[in-house]
Length: 178
Image 1 (cartoon, rainbow, N blue to C red):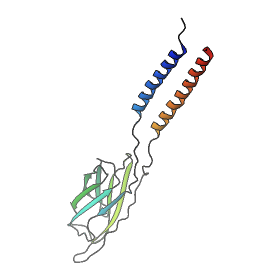
Image 2: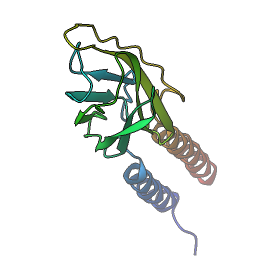
Image 3: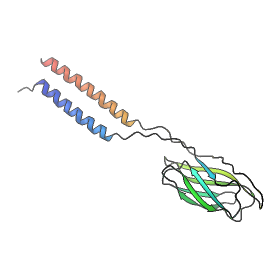
Image 4: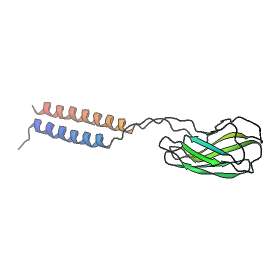
């Protein structure tokens, strides 16, 4: 017994609809990755040895730990966990033995892609009674995370191409059997 051509077309279409549904459900959502410049800045333009300072590091991976240190006489200042925007903030006390003058503050952690990230800035510790300014010169290491995934669009394109090919094949078979 020979099946009718329209039942074959119906089966092909049902299979394609099922395949399309599976692929559509497996496609992730596209998301833009904004390239936030990695920086570390200090809250005060006139830090003093033994005084309080707030350090803010940007461009790190969300929920990752960022280690802060002062490099002129290498000393750890503490760590903070970056928020969902990749910003880590640490309020700490500068070591009392820091000499007056320029000192490098370093923030070390990972960027949003998981690659190591290391940024610095220079602060000038004031001598007793003097005032200075803070400079923010970031020097990031690693590559910036840019772009978005196109895998979902490729899957949809493949489904459309397969669907078109199967419909042409089903139409040709139906025409030949008539």
